[in-house]
Length: 177
Image (cartoon, rainbow, N blue to C red; front, side, top):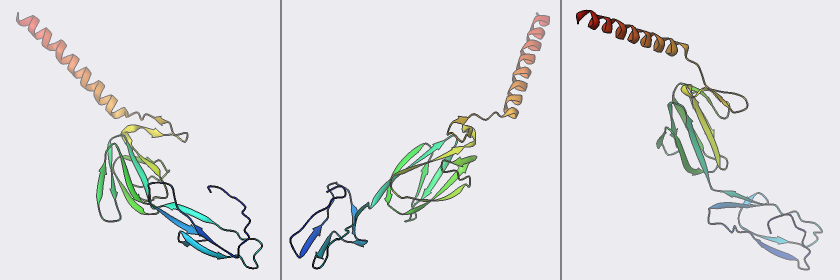
């Protein structure tokens, strides 16, 4: 069964055995207890509500980095993984990891803006770190490039200085010949 269903029985007890048809590790809860089997007595019972919940033991977390920066993931066992582009990692479902951004962090895709972030892994998920050189992340998710007027001004000054140098060095060559 993979959905709600009503069953009628002519017996005084029933054995319920739950299992998952997938090659992954799961925890099975029947009526809130972690077990895959339960023996139910149906004597003097006209209605019985049975709740079966299946939770994967592992989940995948993808960490993306947009812009010039690095994200360090510190796992529950002390292992540190460095991410400069994108990384997919298998973790225990329900675990927490420490993410630390190294660079000019603008914000995380979940709205946080601190360089250090505790992230709870509950099912497969993705988190992205946006760094300063990538632009400003607008509320609709689009990235608006940042304009660095200091860099533009210094670049124009360098180009002007180079052009003046070329002009005066050509004049010096013309007068020397």
